[in-house]
Image (cartoon, rainbow, N blue to C red; front, side, top):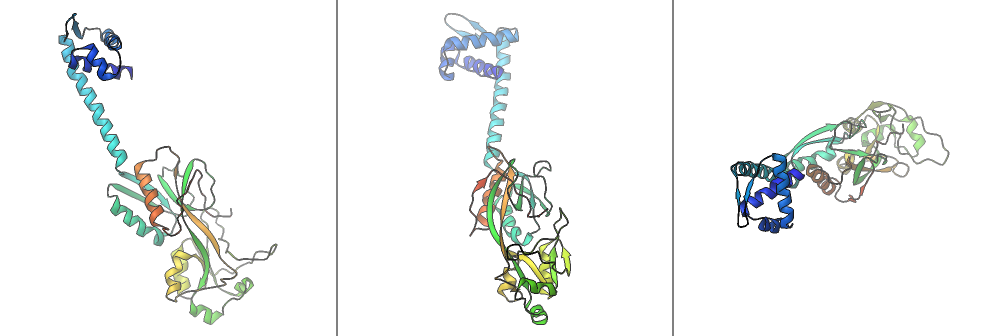
Length: 312
C-alpha cells in the first residue's frame, strides 16, 4: 500500500509541479509530500525531479516513470470500477441444490432466469443432505431443523403434509375413520435417501401409543410417483399440500383422516455466512422469498442451517 500511495503522490506532484498543490489535493502537508517523494527516489535509486526554490521539473527518468505510473493507476481505477459494477449487477454461475419438488420451484426459477439473464443457473435436484460449503454450492433449498452455524437461512414459507387417496380407491376399499383403519389399506411410502428409513406419516395418536405398522404397497423417493399412483387409485399417500392442491380442487383426490393426520413444515433457503453475500446469491434469496410462498414467507434470516426431516 505504501508503494501504491507513492505512485499517487508522484503523479500529483508531476502534474501540479508543486509539493504544496499536491499536498492540498491529497489532504496532507507539503512536507509529507516531499518525504514521500524522497522515499520513492531512494527506493528507485534515481532522481525524479529537479528542485529549485522557484520550480519543480521532471528529470528524464521522472518523465519515463510518470508515463508508467499513470498506466498503473489507470489499471487500478479500471479494476475498481469493474469490481464495483460486478457487485451491482448479479451475474455468473449460481449452483443451487433443491429437494425433489420441481413442481413448486420451477415456475419461480424460470421467472428468475428471465429477470437475471446474466446468471447461469446450475441446479441439482436431490433429497440427499448436501454439504453446502464442502461441495461448493452457492445456496440450497431445504426443509428441517436449524443446525449449522456456518450458514444463514431465509424462511421461504410453510406447507402441510396430508393423507390423500382417489375417490375410486376409497369407494372400493372404504374410507378410513381412524388411524388404525390404515392397517387394512395400501400405503404409498417415501424413503429417506440418507438413512433408508420410511418417512413417518403425520398421524395424531394418543400419548404413549405405539407406532402403527403401516402396510407397504409401494416405496419411492419422489413426490411425482406417489401423486401419480394415488390419482390412479393405487393407494393412500402422504404428500405436501402444494403437490396435491390441484388434484384436491378438481376432485381427483380426497383428504383422508383430516382430523387425525397432518403436520406443518417449512422451506428455507440457505447460503454460506458472509457479511457481504455475492449479488447473485442475494438476488436469488430476495426473488424466491417474494415468489415461492408469497402468502406465507416471513422473510426472516437466521444464522443456522437446516437438515432434512429425516428421523435418523
